[in-house]
Image (tube, rainbow, N blue to C red):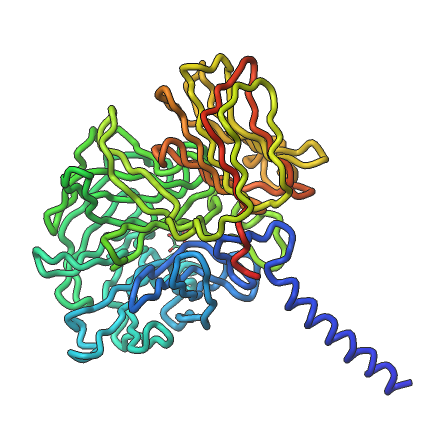
Length: 509
Ligand code: FRU
């Protein structure tokens, strides 16, 4: 009897293990072409750096639970920004605190002395969050630490004299996003400090000096400023501007956390906003693109952004997933373009993702009212829809994804209101937060031709309107997969110029 029981137990254990193996990335709602951790919790992307053909993605990670806790840096690499290989955890919490968000730089000239002339170090600059000090009510709970790697990010050594930047009493003092400023030959550290940004500089990544502050009276202030990023971008005609990305914990355009940006100049010390201080520019009009920053050292001068696909303030810890929680957005190339309103950031999913396309369906030009069903049942799709508004009478047009339970997400343009939207009010499981079942809108004056491009994964949609002039990132959790796709035209006819629909292959199989 004893033997039989233990035999059964062993058989169970085996079954369970192999099930776990096959179930990873097969769970309900699990994104199929987005990065998500194997298990446990993730939030911000961290330490984005390119080195020797590898894009590194570190991320805020708590492997032991699906809710936020002691923060580690998880780690993955990719050679194509599409397929990700998981690597062991890079940084563990220690006696100085949890490892909060930060960046990694390639120290080309070995200014830090951590490497040699031939062995260039990667240096991570991150925030230490001392949870004991927080509990004790100490304001100086956050400080900046560094660590280095001499083996392409595989193993890390923390600097013995951490922290390198101590806190003078700012409760929020975090998320260093360091870069090299060639003109002044110094490292620059934009650091989020409560309601504004502080900029520090350093010759060696170890000693830091405050250079300036920005933003107390600029942009949105509904919540604490977090995760900044500062970088130059050139327009097509060669004009160079500096873009400051500034994430904000609450009070974003469509609720909760979100990402604003500023366009201006930077002289090695001070950032100057070229637009009126009261103007807020939003990088995304959905609810689920937070803490996004860009890759250091990406080849071909590309400025590649990736965000955390959730909403800290509204429901991040409550979304209905089981063994893991949260994913990143797709990597997006940022471009600066002139518009009628001024210089604006445009976003384009990185071209590498197009390799995932299969089963192309092309819909020819047609004038339609009501619905045009699109064949196929994959829940990972790319939709490109080009509409001639000058030949359309419809009040609204766009597409729906839906299931047999009458749950749906609708993506569309409201012609009369001049408003683009993603409506997830009836998208299925929404009860985990009263802030989830919403319609997200953005004022938008379309031209004659409207182009909608959307990437749809199991539980997310990312929408890029007119080559990424405005973007939406939104999660959804249907009770049954959204296998149905229809183009729609409401209250009138729509002149479709062309539509292309692809299935997108999973990156995890
Ligand atoms: C943003 C953030 C950062 C912080 C990290 C902690 O989502 O709050 O400001 O460093 O998450 O996990």
